[in-house]
Every structure is written in C-alpha cells, then in structure tokens.
Length: 222
Image 1 (cartoon, rainbow, N blue to C red):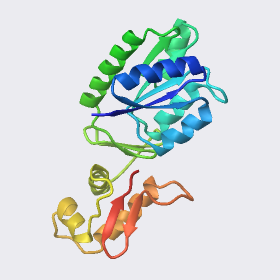
Image 2 (spheres, helix red, strand yellow; image 1 turned 30 degrees about the vertical axis):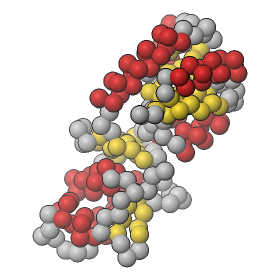
Image 3 (tube, rainbow, N blue to C red; image 1 turned 45 degrees about the horizontal axis):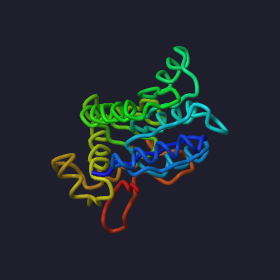
Image 4 (cartoon, rainbow, N blue to C red; image 1 turned 90 degrees about the horizontal axis):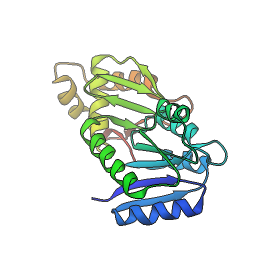
C-alpha cells in the first residue's frame, strides 16, 4: 500500500534527504518550500503524513498546522525545527501536531516514529471528513472548521451515510430506506437536505452535498 506524504521544508538539502529516504520506505512524497503552497495543497489532496518546517517562508509551519486541523485534517503531522526547546515543543503539540523533530534529523528514528504514529492513527481514527467538516461516529459529533455544530439525529445519520460512501449517488428512496426505514413523507429527504445544508455549508460556496438531477444526492470528494 502506497502512503501519501507531504513535506513542506525550505531547506532543499533537508527535503531532498527526506524525499529519498521515505521514497525507499514506499511513500509517495511531494515536496513544497513555503507555507502558502502547503496550505493550498492540503486543501486539494488527502495525505497520510505531513511534515512541516516551523520556519517555513510566509507563515511558518505551526500556522499551517493549526489551520489544517481547523479544516478537519487528520493526517499525522510532524513539525521539523532548527532548534530544540521545551517551549517550542509544547507550542507545536498544542497547535495540533503529533510529534516534533529537531535538525539535524535522525532519519532512522524519524521513520520509526512515523510508522508508529501512522499505525496508531489507522487504529484510532474512525473519523469521516470533507473539507472543513469532521464527523465522529463514535462520539456522535460534527465539527465545522473546528467548532462543534448541533445536528438532529436524522440529520446526523444522513450526513454520516453520505460521508461514509463519498461520490456514491443515493436516490430519494434509498435515503428514506436507510435513514428513516420508510413510514415518512416523500419530501422528508428534501426537507432534511435543506436544513442540513444550512448548518454545514459555508456562505457563498457550493454546497457540500451535491444534487444530481433526476438521480439523488452525493458528497463529492477528490
């Protein structure tokens, strides 16, 4: 299985070293050199592991990490620092990162930590997400840009079903059967989709839930 890794590191010698090492570890590695490029790419693509330099040009890796977590990003995030201080380490972890590595890097040690964090993430993470939304089926919570929003039980089940099967179109009848088990009016789905969109959609942007004319509804993901 090929894992996707994003490395945002301004020192070319360091990013080259990391790319060569993790390519041998069967990661698909992408290299960027500034914070704004990292922000854009994290919006566009799903990654399993993200490495960010704390001193990235334009904003710094910690700012990128905080924004990524607020959007609902769930990849393993490791911060790379030119220094080593307890205060910086605390700030990194508080900002949403999973680990902290000081330069010069011990690649063998870093690789082992990446594997351990990835295994833990695969076991622990049952989250469903798209863009700025994160749905936790076990805790029955939904976060929008890091802030919890309240959904009625049927709204929650409807969103969970659509997130669990991204890009799959569900007809009105299919949603009635799987969320309501029948016994309700035919316009129930349309009404709940409307109220759900009001709660989860960002103003001025296309709806997270796509209406496929004559077929039903889906949540589209890259």
